[in-house]
Image 1: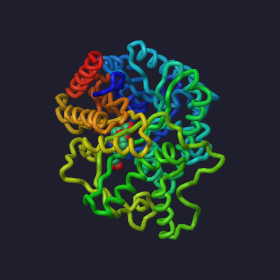
Image 2: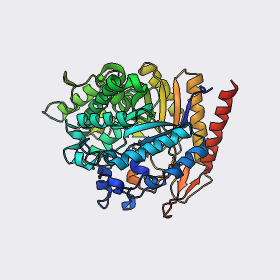
Image 3: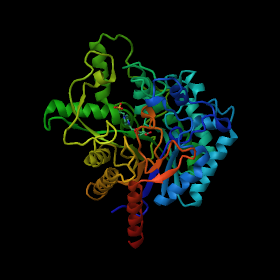
Image 4: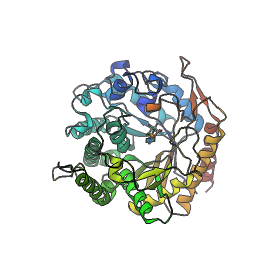
Length: 469
Ligand code: GBH
């Protein structure tokens, strides 16, 4: 049984849907720069136009209403609001755009959940060192305060940073996301560190200056797969799966929810590997100092993005300076976990329930919002997307079990995504939407998928139940 005030939502992110990359005074972001270099993104696709939500917001609102969502998760484009990244110059048209989105949602009784940062750093700040620079945390804090001040009278659910793991690792270790840096085993830890500082500063700002009046809640959205030992009960594999989880979820959740510092497993593994490789410098995993904001306790709820699961055993990246080598954990595909759609997404519904149970037990039983969960389509367009319907049905029934049988305090579920959109390195070749978007059509026509209709049915059934009881 879902609580009567359960949030039934869908999510998007600014760069993936808005387009209007230069419209109305917007400054460039690192994703604009990244996509405009050939050979980086599938088919050299980019988000210049995207779903054109900058001009077609009202079409998105129709989709939201058609699904019967109680909540909509969107992100703000930092460079649309503050073109050079600083509050020295505020772009009024950007403020107007988001004001309209927020006001329209509220007029339709849909609550906004707003992410301040979903991968799209203003290029002007990248030019000053980006997330590797110690200056970035204070800059993010100013931006966050500006947003709380401007929109916080109406927005009550805030996410500071979406998936610091992905920004750090894919953007600075693998180089497959903007800003496209490949500095394995080094930059990602520094970026993660600065993201934690930035998040904590913004939370403290909200807590001391806005919370009393605005009465909202603030967290950061953490992605994690569920990890299981490759050979059940094999001690080495169990330990490898634990390390893999610590390096993904623990990296950020441990400091914020448990100790104020990184998991011990992570610290000792990185130190040991540094020694082995004869790396003489100071630890590659930075330490928090007295001058840093307190990290512990800087989340009012747990925001989880879950997509898939992996089996794990020791090994991988041997002898290299890399996160994989630090973890000594290799992922193995389980043949019984079907992969359909995008290559990385093995469908493992029970992984969601296990992860929720793990979060309850490891992080002191927090209120949890599943801020993303979804399934992709590739190849020929299928509007009757039976597999995705099944995916959502199974995922939601796992959430119900987590609530009823495991006592996890799940407060909401957001499908990724409302619309087919720019899927980062995969461009438009991977479709995550509950609505199809025709990217050949100048009007970017939206058409509901069968999975969208089925999600709408689930929501309306749950709303009826909550009225009856
Ligand atoms: C989310 O990340 C993002 O928040 C969202 O913007 C995105 O659209 C959505 O997922 C769907 O991808 O290609 O083998 O290197 C989820 C975490 C981590 C999942 C990176 C895909 C790529 C694996 N993602 N992973 S690989």
